[in-house]
Image 1 (cartoon, rainbow, N blue to C red):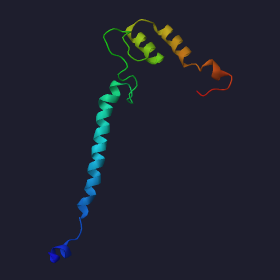
Image 2 (spheres, rainbow, N blue to C red):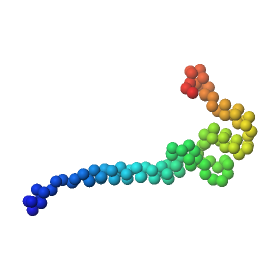
Image 3 (cartoon, helix red, strand yellow):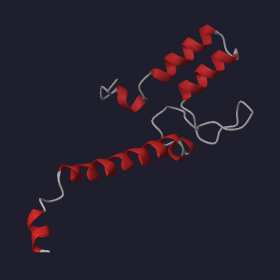
Image 4 (cartoon, rainbow, N blue to C red):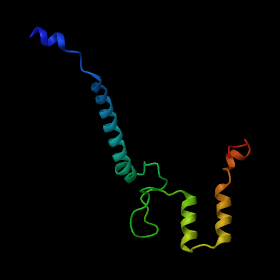
Length: 105
């Protein structure tokens, strides 16, 4: 038995694979959450992901960004190009509070 302990040289370089396996598990869990749960609740990184459900044009469970609503209305033909440009210009203006202070653009 003493000779077996004397011949043992430690775990070897394969021990470095264990942290890599755990890193892979964490990355897979995060990727799975991003693709399913977080997008369903609107916490994903894609703008507007999961924002609308239902069949009607106004069936929104969460508030959409005003520029997205304007773009959708223009695409559906509810408003013409001139009205679209005018409303987009108004929406892109800085809020009145920031005008006097030189708000960020």
